[in-house]
Structure formats: structure tokens, C-alpha cells
Length: 485
Image (cartoon, rainbow, N blue to C red):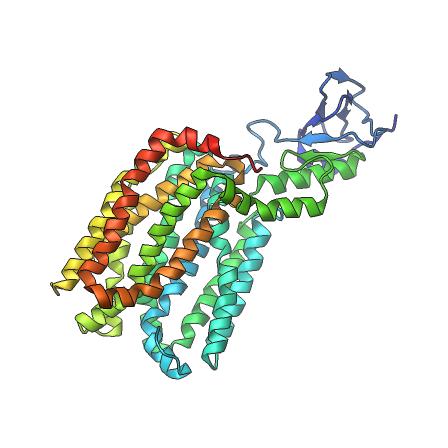
């Protein structure tokens, strides 16, 4: 029987609960200078000397888990203040990404003139977020130096690849560090900041464009993201349980000569298999989980309508109310007011997915009400405050609905929230891209009143039946999904 003693620094791992996958004797790995020990539990409950580890069988493998519910390395057990810091830091990335998309709106005339354009898990959370943030920042700098429209479109496309990671890992990071019963308040704040971006963006973008030129819009974004990544290097630790436990398993394997693995991977899983499983899981989830398909379609329509409204908001106040670029920026604050009001409502307490459904009801009603109000007041050319009130009502409904559906996905897919979020993100971003394409043509043909009413009636079809379906048939629909873990 081969023996292997763990090195002194192994005491930092404290107690590693290790479960043997095959019938084998159980050993306690002794520490040379620490009283902590790693317990090895086998399927046949045999015990051997605490000073030795049997690694004679090549096929033997051990499962690495958390050291009980109070394991300090588990992100759920990090200090509350630190978890809030991570939550807000991560949300700031989403805020600037969303804001940068709408910052350019007030500067489009100047930009079009200058460029002669016509106006139309595997690797964990931390490295992915930091690398993609740097990538986003670099291509934002390139956007500012664009000499023509081809360069601008290409650089914006590439920066979009980097910025998209904020939305893919946002929910998983919150799931990593907050227990289900604690997620209500953190989820509300963390969702609010990114969605506030499109409302604040035009105001900031308009000011920057008028004062120092449109190119500085991209450079300011790059500077902000660069500073955020610098702070993240020191204050954004790895939160993925798969990554943390994986590192722990690799250290145990190196120190003891045994083979250790986690519940997130098979005992003999190759790197290529891990990559393929991780890359294809979002697609497989979206293709095989009816509940994810249903919620993703609802969320996609919400995001499509949001960007539909954002893409035409400026033109309403320039064409119908004849306001200046700087004045137009303030109207986006109406959406922010609606967001803030909705954010006073917390989702928390109960952790079953179906308990997230009730807040979808007021959100589903406020979205069409806001669209009707916004559209017909604009059609009648009432005082500018009236369309703003409609936009605020819409914004309130959007936040309530989106937060509830996001929390529903979070609770439904447990440790695979990253893949489920990525799957739903595809539909959301597709809708956000497609809807604005036909916005101008739709308003030109139907007018502001009937154009928004069309969107509102469709929202009613989604907003009213959706919560009822999820509440009554939630478990049955989820059971229909084929397991794709």
C-alpha cells in the first residue's frame, strides 16, 4: 500500500469531505503541522490508518465537496459586506455596457455627418469577466478612432462580444454568493443597475457629444470599463463552486497522488469532453427544457419592446416636440423613475420557482398600460410630461416582470444558471436587435397611438396568461424537460 503525506500548507484546505466512488478503504490524510484532516468516505464504510492514503488502484477516485454548511471557502459563507461589494461591482459592468448602447443615440446626427453614414463555467466567472472586459474596453477605444462607418460597425460588433459576458454571468454570480432566501434584495439591486444604463446613457452621451465630441463617448466608456477591471482584479474573486472545488480537487490529487474530482465533472472526464459539455449545454437546455423556452420567449418580447421604445424615444421629442439634443436626454429619466419605483418591491423569502410568479402579474399589466399611455399622449401631442409618465409606467412594469422571470430561471436551474441564462440571453438579444429595425416604419405607418397599442395588445397576450400558466402547470412543464446536465 503506497503512502503519501500532505504538505504543511495543506492545512489551508481545512477539512475536505471526500467520498470514494468505488469500494475502497477509507483513509484520513494526516497533516504534518495541522490538526485538520481530510476524511475519505467509501461506499463500504471501511477505515484504515489516519496516517496513510491508498493509491494503489489506478481507477480509484474521490469526490470533493464543501466542508459542511459553514465552509468559509463557499461563496455563500463569505462576509455579507464583501458579497455586496462583489454584487455591486459586477452590476456596474452591466450598467456601463447597457448605458454605452444608448449613449450614442443623441450623438447620431454628428456621428453620421463625420462618417458619412445614413441614419437607419469551465474556466470560472472571474477570468472570463476580466478578459472580456478588457476586450470590450480595447474595441471601444478603436470605435472612438474610427475613420469610417465600416471600422465603427466592426469595432462595435467586436466590443459587443466582450460586453455580452456581463449579462451571461450576472445571474450565476448572484446565485454563487447569495443563498436562495437572501437573493431578493440583492437580485433587485443587481438587476436595477444594468437596466438603468439605457435610461442614463442618452443623458450622459448627449452631454459628452455636445461638450467634447462624439468620439469621447467611446473613450469614456473604455476608461470606465478599464477602471472597473482594475478594481475587479483585487476585489472580484472566483465565485464558481465548480472552479473553487475543482482547484481543491487538483491540489488534493497533486499532494496525495490520488485521483479527486467534483460533482461537476466525471471521475475520468477528459478536458475535451468538459469543453464540449459546457459549450453545448445552453443550446441543449434551450432545445429540451420547455419551461426555459416559455420564460425566454416572454423575456425576449419584453426586451424587444424596451429597445423598440428606446430606439424611437429621441425622434419623438425632436420631430413632434422640436426639442434640442440636450433636452431630449432628460426624458430618458422617465424610464429611470419607473425603474426606481419598481425596485422598491423585493422578491425573496420563498425559494421555489413558482413563488417568483406573482410579481409577474403587475409587471405584465403595467407594460401595456404604459405603452397605451405613452403612444396616445404622443399621438395627441399633449404636454411632454404625458409621454414621460407613460414611459415611467412602462419602465416600472418592465423591471417587475424581468426581475421576476430572471429569478424564476435562477431558482429553476440551480447550479447551471450560467447555461440557462446564456440560453435565454440569445432570444433576448435577438429581439433587442430585431425590434428596432421595424420601429420607424411601424410608427410611420400606424402612428404613435396605434403603433404602441399594437405592442401593448401583444404584451397583454403574453403578460396575463404567462403567470397563470407558470403558476398552475409549473411542475408539469419542468418535468417534461429532458435532463441535459
